[in-house]
Length: 400
Image 1 (spheres, rainbow, N blue to C red):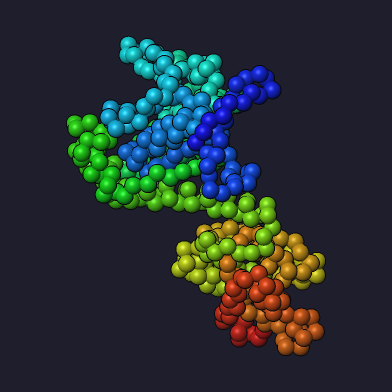
Image 2: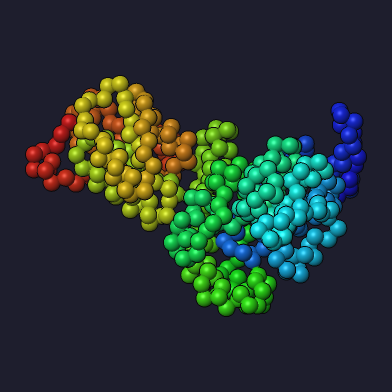
C-alpha cells in the first residue's frame, strides 16, 4: 500500500492508506468498509494465538500508515510472540508497588496523552492492581480509550465472558476470577475467533509454547484436558456464531431484501389456543433439534380472534423447549406470520392442521392455505402437522 499524507481541519497531519496506483481494476469508493474502531480477538483458551494475531494486525496497519502503539502486551515469555512486536512503538508500563511486590500495568494516562490512532491492549479481562490507575478493570480502561477517539484491538478468552464464566467453572473446576460483561464484548465492531484444535493446543503446551515447563503437567491434567478444550472451543464457536447471526439479520433488515438466506435453519411454529397445539410445538421442537436450528414460537393476536384457552402453559412449554416466544398483532394472521418469517429469516414454518369444517374454510377462508401461498412467494417451506389430542378426537372437532 502507498501512504499519502493529508491535513485535516484541525491542522493535524493524518496519514491515510491508499491503494497502489497500478491496480488492474477500478475500486469504487466505499466498496470496502472501514476496519472498525473496536476489534476483539476471542479464543477458547490461552495459547490459541490471540496476541500473535493482534500484533500481526497492528503491524500490518502500521505498515499501511496508521499511527499504532502498544498500550499493553503480555508475551508470557513466548519468543515468537515477542518477535511480533517488531518495530511497533511501546508505551512504557506503569510500575506499581502492592503489598511489597512490584507489578507492571498499562499506563492509561500515557496512552491517552500520546493519543495514537490505534492502541493494542492485551487481555481485556485483566484486573488492575489496586492503586495503579483510575479503574479496577482493563476493559474500563479500553472504554476510556474508545471514548477518547482511539481505536482499540484487544484479546479475551471465552471463559472470561460473564454469561459463560459460571458454566466454565462448573465444567473445569477452575475458578474464573476475571470477568468481562457481555455488553462490552458486544460493543466490538469486529469480533474475530482465533481457533485451534484441542490436540494442537495440547501439543503447543507440551512444547513449552504456552506455559513454562514446571506448569505443563498440571495444566494437561486439569484445565487443558481434551474434554475441557473441546467444550471451550464449542462455547467460543457458538458465541461468535450468535454474534454473526445478529449482524446478518441487522444487515438484511436494513436492506429489506425480501429473500431468505439459508445460512442456518430457523424453525417457526404458529400457535393458537386450540387443543393439541402443545403437540404441534413438540413436533416443531424436534424438527429444530434435528436441524440444529433456531426455534421460534409465534402467536398472532387479531381483532376478530375468538375466545381461546390461556396461552401461559404454551409459553412455558416453549421456554422449556428452548424456543423464543413472540406475540404479534395483525388483523391478517396469514400475512402477519409470513411477514414475521421474512423479517427473522425463518426457513421453515410449522402449522397445526385446522379442524374447521370444509364449509367454514370455504366461507371464512383457510389461514393455512394462505400461509402456504404467501410463504411460497418468499421461498419458505411450510409443514402442516396433525393435532393429536385424544379428548378432542372423542368429543369431535372444535370450530378453531
